[in-house]
Image (cartoon, rainbow, N blue to C red; front, side, top):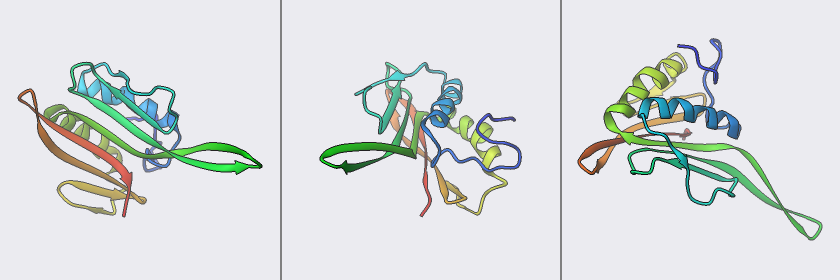
Length: 147
């Protein structure tokens, strides 16, 4: 499977990348979760992006590094790279997203793993089941800097 986020000789770097890379990942997430998500919450914030469907069955969230500095007497805010991604949805669909999309892209890059997480190039993908939502089993994928 070809991904616009990686080339065949590179391991994916969703965390540590720019906002546009994470936004392009949302199209893949919506396809697998089968829900149309819209930006929710404070849409003017540049350090936090949250997208969700209107029924509470799916969410795609990512955070961006934010740094405040003084430039003379003026506060200047700069935004850096994405520092974490969280994907939430029906367990069956999240599992399929993990199995068909994420795992094939990172399996050759893997440095450590367990049944619920994989580490590669300083990043970690965690895949867990979550409580039910209206009787539907839910799960999440979190991509973050590894420890």
